[in-house]
Amino acid sequence: MHIERPNCTNIAGVDEVGRGPLVGDVVTAAVILDPNKPIAGLTDSKKLSEKKRRLLAEEIKEKALAYCIARATVAEIDELNILHATMLAMTRAVEGLPIEAEFVFVDGNRLPTLNVPAQAVVKGDSLVAEISAASILAKVTRDSEMVALDKQYPEYGFAGHKGYPTKAHFQALAEHGVTEHHRRSFKPVKQALQSQ
Image 1 (cartoon, one colour):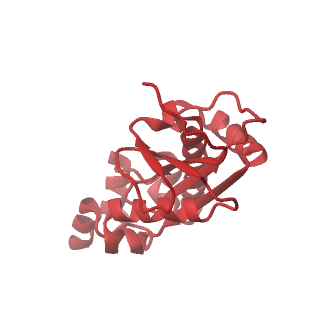
Image 2: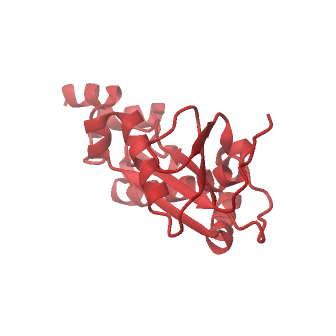
Image 3: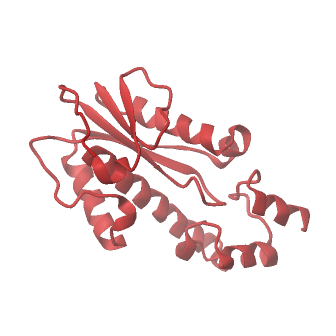
């Protein structure tokens, strides 16, 4: 698929990580790459090894013209629903950029509320370098938060499943109940709360 790139310099890519998990914030990133400092190997963060993602995340932070990592909290997800919370987090990422974006590519098929022209790109994290960079930053950030949470709550195995609804996670919920970091509006968490 050919993506028509607008004729301007400050093009931001936006992506999110963490719509599906039962625990933790939804994390977004916006990145404006520097055309004079290309970064090799940018692609959808899910296609990269953890080590490669971490190395690329450092390189993106070093070479990008600007980046911003933003989020919507568990409370906001429960209050707004995951879609609206994700859109809010994406808006925050773009508005938080230290230099203003002239155009924004957003991964997916919906656009958050933005004050700049934007285009939604399905599978954008594989097609648009800026979105790939954003997906890497968001994933590395959220994964490291899950590893930190794992130290607090080792019995849940967050470092392994990153909060996603896996068999191990369901078992931990059944055995240990719901933490303050769980999204109470998500069905499996609701069910675990009812049986507590």
